[in-house]
Length: 300
Image (cartoon, rainbow, N blue to C red; front, side):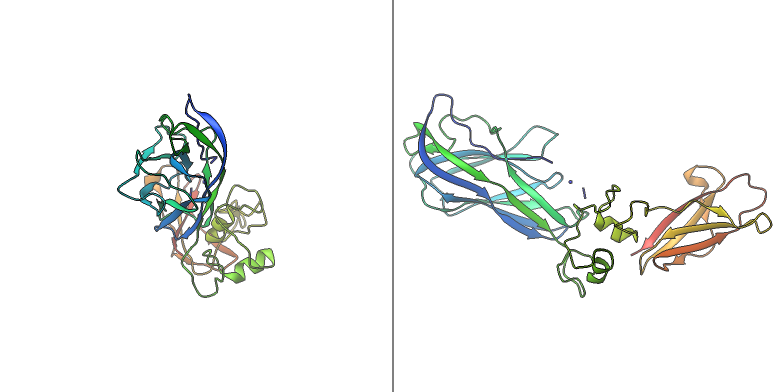
């Protein structure tokens, strides 16, 4: 769940001249669930007759391109369509190159459709599909929206697209973002588009993660952690533990005398959630100089 600046451009060939023909190329929109595949069309909304194009498209980070399906404007045989992934680890971008030695395309419609895999752990949100400037496609002479005779490049504009990741619909979740309507109303006063891309209280944890963790998305001090333990009283020796919880969760408390993973062991029975706050009192052995605690959420 992981979140990028991208784009798609059409570079003129070095020796080409520019004409005043108008083209508008845009990435479309699509919606898909985590673990699914989204189909983003690359659409020509305005066009002059052209023999090919060369373009770079930046995709959301960690969402790989799994295929390209040619549209009605690029018949086969006739047009060659080549896909190339940029050799740049800092971006997730692909370049597309299409051309024909004998045909042209004109009018409006879909040039091709990009198939994008959505990892299962992707949080709900709106992820941009952007077109890049300057063009980073492999340089190929006269195929950056080249004219019908291949002698000049055509003037153009571009538009970005959007991939909306939404959880499968469930009862009480009218907008399909994986969060119950009553939770959104409780904290925001209305049903809203809470996603993995929004962070209302700016505490570094997205609103979607706040929901999963049982924390308050409007309070920056409400975090995913055990509140500082407190000693109930010197006579009692008990340590009071508190943590935010969400309905339906089950939690396990573990204790250790030192901060080594293998030294932690379970304390008492697993605790069912008692939203909005769980409280538990532990009585560590009197001969341990210090106690360290950690919290494990077992179920949703």
